[in-house]
Image (cartoon, rainbow, N blue to C red; front, side, top):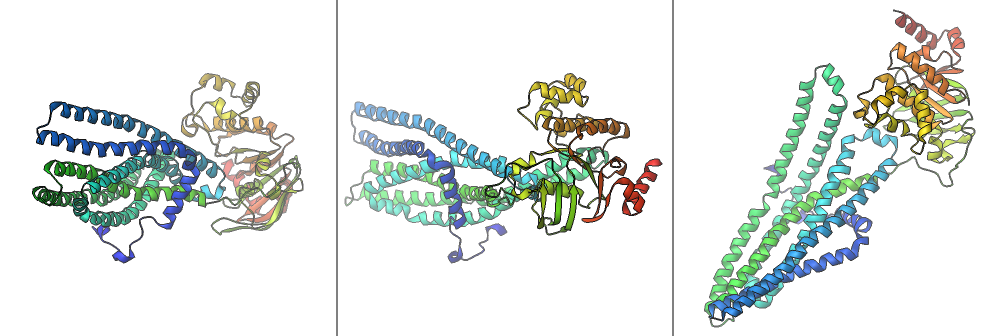
Length: 597
């Protein structure tokens, strides 16, 4: 297979730990493990005792064999057996405690890492979520974090125990017979070469595996979210082919990964067989020769000792192979921290401002993160306490203008002020608390209506929540459904019911600036009229900004801005714009003719 072919000469091979690997490991240690050093010391002491148990077992086995070979007393043999039972009982206790403590340490570390990741992701700019697939975020917070927990808690501790066992037992065997041990380990460099070679291949394949898993999870989410469209358009076979193709890719990568990992065990087995042959031959000769202080019991005990070395050595090589995959995962998780938000609070950010004042765009220029220019020198004024509408075709920049007000993006140049205060000098949380939003795409959680309404103000009292529920006409529905969840994205609600939840949230939040972003565009005419009555009451005495595609919904606005491809074409009241006979008039008459059919 091509992944088995070395891409470089031995002299050009990459080190087992790259610079990035060492930095990532140091980051994880200092961030999440260093504070647990006392517990780690306790674990290491128990692991050390487990290694000493194996060394004592070899020595006791040799003593027991001599009792048998030299026709010793039965009582001596019983004593040896009792001591073996005692020391292995101690090892059994520590074999229970070590994984329990290590699992707690690893789970706690990964829990804190997940918490920090969530905090960091919550601070990311909107642009990050627009360019990052949701499957990638889920992969890092769920799968990769869990993989790290298992690797650190179980795999790494077992590897440390195996390493300590190898060192202690090898030290004892070296003390017993340096010549025979040197003869036994002459083949070990071969194992080191295999570990180095396989590690390189593992990193290559594991990186592909993480990308494939991210694509697969994103595909699953897209399929689930779009199932209504899939069903209506009868595209189940298309979705099935798309997901099956992704699973086939995962299968192929998994097979390649297992194929590379599978090279280690037979390699170690071959080396172990050669070592045992050398021990049998060399040790047998030393036992038969009078020139060496070695008898049959010592040779048998030496072979048992080498068995106790090679079993941990085999597991240790597997650990180094798995470690390469875990290093890729660790780098993937830490990569989130390398992305820092650009929209942050300035030093000494202002915490108070006149949220009921005018919202002014002064010579605003803006381009999207991908470099696409939208606004060039836009000037607008949204008067405090008045209703201002923004209209225009899709892609004209209506919703982006709302996003700029809430500082979801940074400006290229120019400034936006509210009540005379530049918004980039305000604390971000203070600025955004001034907005209530009723949009077409409402986020509905899979919980009760009550909890969905309370989402915007968790500290609200029951009386306040009931008041807004009654205000939007949902009292009967709430009592009927009780605590029943609404399904994913509110699938069990109608469009009008979802909009009423959004309006109830806006009433409960009671912010001075109200944004209506295509708030009724998905509703039928009757429901729209019902909802509009409630919205009109909500908008009373607030600075209200309406984005609407249907122009009949904005004729009552105090001012209307007309946008097209980021350009401000016209402004005025409905009557003024109609009288001028420009782009707005054409849109309005076209829609009126269409709706009149």
